[in-house]
Image (cartoon, rainbow over all chains, first blue to last red; front, side):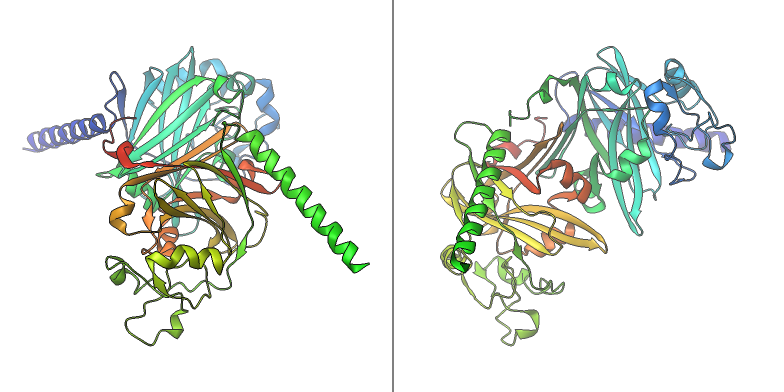
Length: 242
Length: 242
């Protein structure tokens, strides 16, 4: 009996995901645009000081280890910049992608333009939605985070990080686009390197920021569809082309 | 001597404005795009409850009077939706434009695309930057407001209101665009009618919202240039054209 109940639950989940997928396809109907349903990742804890020592290592191409701040004993081990909290892993840039895929089961999508469909936006902060995006010969990490910067007022922060060095990141431009309810919001910027701290990008607000009411306006049935496009950074060579 | 000092001060102000104007022109170099320098208007007081009774009158085409909430005696006189605070004026839609021009000396600009250059972004909240924009046979009011929604954390809110009814407003789409420091932020929406309450639009966050650090990234020498474009609302007839 329990088996059948579980099967029925799984079928219902599949129908729900399929429904969300079609809803997103309706909104993002550009031919060939891939829609990816992204479920939330609960962050166990936010350590606000863990970014402090991370900057020194960013230009050396060493990915700081994913330790809690309290666990750092060796002065060579700097606090975590990996957006997945409570992960004790450490490693160089080349092995970040296999680590994220295998250990954290983060999906990787191909294509210059994809749609990131974050589900369950109502979940309490802090919550992350993460996906990897492979295009133009590189891998990128999109992080959407729900966080209470001001107590009692959760906000959504979305940014794109290159799994590469800051110099490599400067060659690209990413665009995040929301479009619903007769409103459209576009954010374009140079991606940050994963060697920089995603926490500081978000705490500085140097990313796409949405308050809860705006996120609700852009959401459909509790899911937020974000169109993502990555190009080489010719777009920003001149700021005069508005 | 005092006369010469004042003259010198006025010349310096002119040079400063001219300098800002050229800076904005450099950024917004599209041919024929008009750059307008907008100085701040200090709001004397924000009365958070003054919007409560304003909704009832919006569909009747009557502009609620610019009274403080405490001064309303006649039940026909609803609290102010005029973005200029502490103004005792009241009147119908047809006379709003002459009132704003003559009494409050708000500039009116012509053209489908203009650049709004708000000066002195460092001034403490609450502060408003306001301009009228005439195009497509209608007048619009752009309001940029610096306000502390969360104490100690001022934010910037920008919205466009049609000096007309909500039904007329539905025929248009406005776009606000910021472009600087390898970042670009675009907001597109249907303008709200001036008969609706600008305070509630801003308190709901249903507008372009910038935190202080992002406003600084987009600012140049303390001035924020916002590109404005208004079109008829064909753009939003389908949400599938991302």
